[in-house]
Image (cartoon, rainbow, N blue to C red):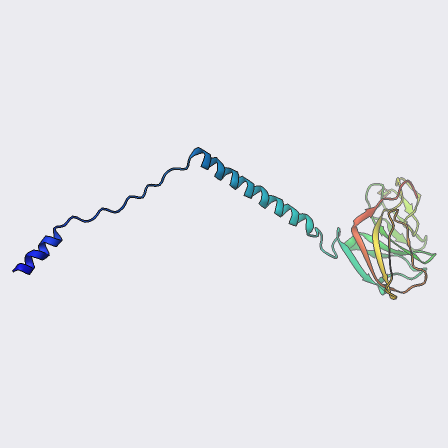
Length: 195
Ligand code: FES
């Protein structure tokens, strides 16, 4: 009997109240601080993304705007017709003095594509008749200047290299055997006047 009355007395005790945790709203100063922090993180993220975008090459190798690589066997011999590379819109041209130049295959008049005419040994534009020599030099027609050129780097079998200068002059080969040749279609050199 006594045990039963003790149990009842315990059950009748009121439950203890949960401690109240007060969450205070951020002050105006804290709120501005959070906004400033978020803005800085956003700006830094954008700057980093921009840097990565600039650091990565924009064009893949072998697509117009990027670099095209060839072996020595792809380069014409002296006296050969120039080799057309349609995907890069340029010509590999070996000149009579055993030098090399990569010519942008777009007419400097209104952008048609001149063809190499073997019988006349010159480039002739089908649109308005501009004509260019094997080295891209303007001969006649309404084109305002010679064909543009692409910067090229040649690696020879002996390990030496030669590159196009800032004027886009042909690279002398001097009888050396070419191991590889890299034409950068992202680096176009405009020839001044009709030279
Ligand atoms: S586009 Fe070539 S001559 Fe006019």
